[in-house]
Image (cartoon, rainbow, N blue to C red; front, top):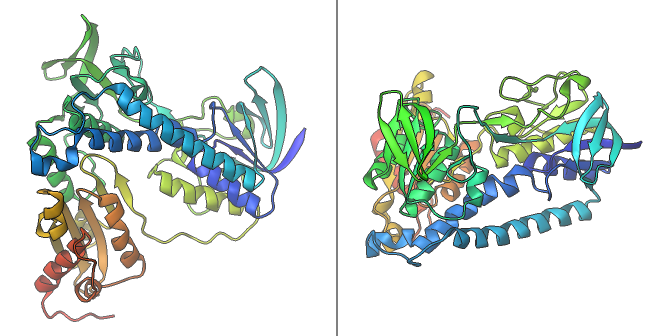
Length: 467
């Protein structure tokens, strides 16, 4: 039996970052990946594919130029599923090649196969050819990610009723689509297909969406979706879904009936822990397959077994998963692990993008912090005019007492890039004066920070900082 300092199950963001970190500390590391290629959900069915699909859709549809040339404008008149898939395959090949090179350069060993516990320190790996090997780890990092939640009542067929993994394999673009689930994944795919001029209806039992995002940003986002004729049926539930004459018919709990070409079920994901035989290691997952961990060390209740990434739950971001994997690996091999900065950005790659960092206005109110907001609209910037933007909003929240930035929230083109300026100021405890006194490149969308800063500064008046 081979003995390793660290066994890593899964090669997604948390697994690969943890494995490379441990290897850089001189430890013997083995990564076990059950997929055909390394990369995990992030590379093959999640983060990278969905963002590649988004970029391809926006480019081929001419979406970004429609502010100038009208809603009928297209770069490619007839866009096929193959057009979308071609760019996706090129991108995935590159991601896998980079990851394999990183493993080779850092001397991280990796094998393909399904891993399961025999005891708390030993795992069985069943390889594709049926060979069974046993490996042992002084420490073990579980970074198995998640898989789509597939309830029994949903008639999945891989063609007209699909989950988010199957959506990447469609052969033709639907003329109409119903998306069940107004979470991040559902909203991203709904808006991407809407940009391709598919008639999209979004259904969710909750009467609100994206409750962790600043309410004003969500309201602006919803306005943009409705303005382009996307139907939002919030507070309604699909009780019955049946195939009918090549279409799909849905019956909602209020009696309403919908007929569509395709249904995407995107109402949640499950931790991919069901095949790990967790009981043999003294562990158990919750009802959604997730593992409970110490939020500072990512250790499970079994001290030498760690878990990181989507399998531990919110925020389920590739960026935060990487940090979790790195911290878990350092703790696992006995190295010091510094706590990451308090504020991290959250990005939603919908059309338009949403990105946020820090406290929302609702959270500031709950904490009874005296505050003021500054708002800038992208159409107020010269760059916005050049790009033909008539939408887009940047909002910053400042403390009246300390004048420090408390939160930055953006909806619009480039939001996931722009947010990092606000993130840096937040973590460095900067004040409104930073935005008022600093010079930004002209013309850029980043000028919106100065506009919003001045907006807040004017409202704050002569209130002096108590720093």
